[in-house]
Image (tube, rainbow, N blue to C red; front, top):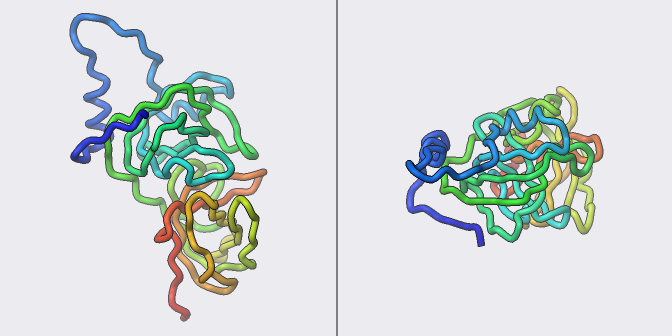
Length: 221
């Protein structure tokens, strides 16, 4: 098990400052630490070491994979596997692995090591127009508000899919089976607020909620 819990939450910057101070004496060789923003600029196949706050838990996107997402400030990235670690939202995680693409160009890290450093506040979802969910938002938590403009499509065993539009263009919402989110109350024509991971699947940008409360149905006007 990789999970290490603390009894308090601290800021990510403060936690990193502590973890990056070397003890006097022995010198321990480590892979250089990349910010997530720096890692996202590296060529595919590069080895990166990144630190961020988990914005989804292990298995939230099952059965696609057993990974999770992390974010540092305004930039995030997906980790393809938890390596049997029970990662929970709000944990600060250091990951070393290979930069790769997954499921239609989602930039991801295929991990070789995962270490939980502590806990921190989860970054708030970034409010965006539905037409703005794109490569620019990929990897981070976002929040959209609009009308469901398609039927709720059952894409078993992977989950449920539907489109939301606020007038700037539709974006897809994908509710993964691993989240356990109940979509039975959703229907075309409802106004909703949805937050989740900004991802991409086979060339289509989407928002992937993580918890039931990430989907909120608004009152009819």
